[in-house]
Image (cartoon, rainbow, N blue to C red; front, side):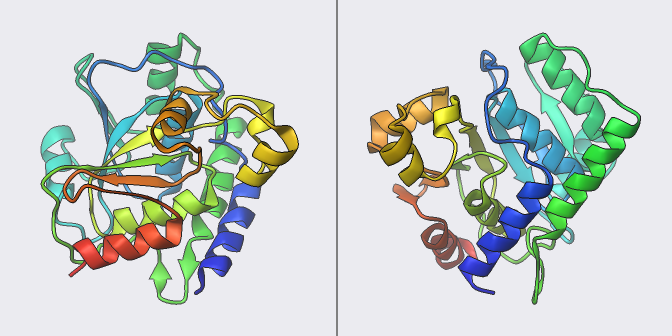
Length: 255
């Protein structure tokens, strides 16, 4: 399907669950990166990634799509089973399964917040997340779900992204399928004037670009704020534009 069709599908899915857009409770980044074993097409993994955006937390993403051989066995050694998401926090010595427990842990540990509601609130969250994840369905299968052969990079890539972004979603799905580890740099919006496209933000609202930690970094180092933005320390490549990033990933790492 075309990039435009992908974008429209991802917007539709996002509207069912408009979370993972803004930083709601900025937290102090931990000394060591959080590690998250997950895959893009999982609705439970999506719930955790939403909270990473909303708490302004970065994480090392270790993709574990179906049929993957790179990190699934490692996840089983670490946690005892191949179930995702799996969070490893070396700052506190914590290893956790279950998205609801991971979310409550992140809220408590890094933002001083209480647990999210369970019961019907949780059921609605899971259902809407599932619908949003299912919009990744394509003619050739589920993007971000099944592993494809790839060459492993020596160092993890870096991706500036926020969960709701439809353009970022397609890049994360490509990374997931290729089992490419990457540091997720949460780039949530920090002000209501950030809402909308970059054109709306910059020309209509005239909002400042660096309203959150990683958005400031993008402003200072690239002169603009847009997601996704990929950095590959293995090749020295850094780039915007989801279509260009996906093409680069396939040409550089896919087999």
